[in-house]
Length: 416
Ligand code: COA
Image (tube, rainbow, N blue to C red; front, side):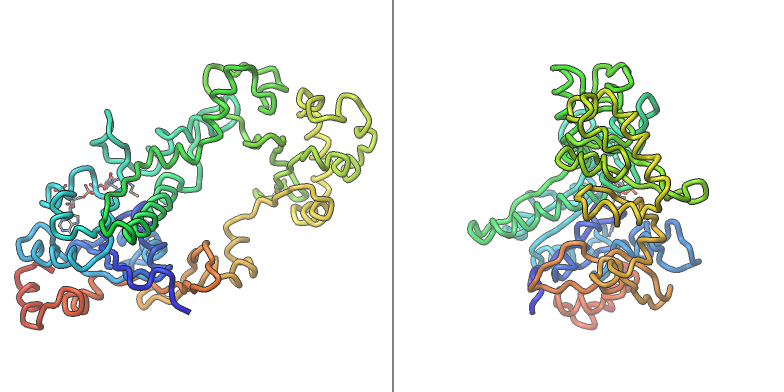
């Protein structure tokens, strides 16, 4: 079995999280990802949030699997010469520097096209063209600007950011799709193209249902929102709605047995209309099946607090896993709130390679998230992240084509 992206070479100028997420995915699919890092410094995340002194952080190791690392000063003359050769030899260049950084280095899109017309040049920035295009942006800024924060949090409470890194990792995912699309297009056109993804746009794309609700608001209250059943004001914009489901089937997070001591003893419970009768039976409210206030989805909307109170009285007598076992055969959609500890220890996730244990020469063994996308004919094993400059010599020799003497000279000059 061959890897799906075998033969594709990526010039990886990414750092922190958004860009590295993208190139890690491409590396998992078999692309040769050459991560370019500043000599002696490297990706700043190598040293951020360290749990073990002087060892690459988990932040770095978990975002840079299956890559090779070369140190190269792309502001130095000799470094620039080497960089030009790398551009000639690569299919894709990916970067997420602050706006204008590559132009300042002398590598504008026009210049890159001149060097290699087949090059696909992919960038992540915080914002697209407009008032904020020059801003440096991190995860939570993107969550705030992309509509996520204003629609996340308790009804009537302050805006909240989510734990899922939708601004960084989410935009990295979007960019990876843009790159493989451009690679596919290059098969016909023979030409590279520019792929750009702004974090604000990526977050907004993931908040699509909230823009849907913004427009629905003009035609009346959002009847499935907690505001409707509690008589709260909706205001002018899609409000925060706690744990209300984003779909048409009302759902909430409910306590399960042990919630007093276990912060994750909760389940998500969806009152799917099609299985409402099963819900009534399982929670011991068979009379609701015929009661005019509860029998239909429309009738239930003003009474959702009462509905979920009754369901919670039942879920509190069961563990979150018992709720799952009892509801699944009845087609009632429920989801136990799994802690990171439970996920880390989950045998099924280990078996599929979604949670993997990796050996690292300096830190020993650590857990990581493997490739969540499974291809039937293209394996994607997870390999440890590279040490800073671990592959400098081999890349200079095999990809750039330098002799041992030239490599020595480049090192003496501080270019690598
Ligand atoms: N050789 C020489 N110089 C290098 C280099 C190399 N190999 N790699 C990077 N540099 C330089 C850059 O050219 C830049 O120099 P300049 O400011 O003189 O142009 C400098 O290092 C710093 O790069 P920058 O991107 O500005 O880093 P930062 O730490 O100040 O900002 C971000 C970090 C993430 C805020 C910023 O890169 C950004 O906004 N990126 C786009 C959005 C994004 O991806 N954000 C999320 C990150 S998870």
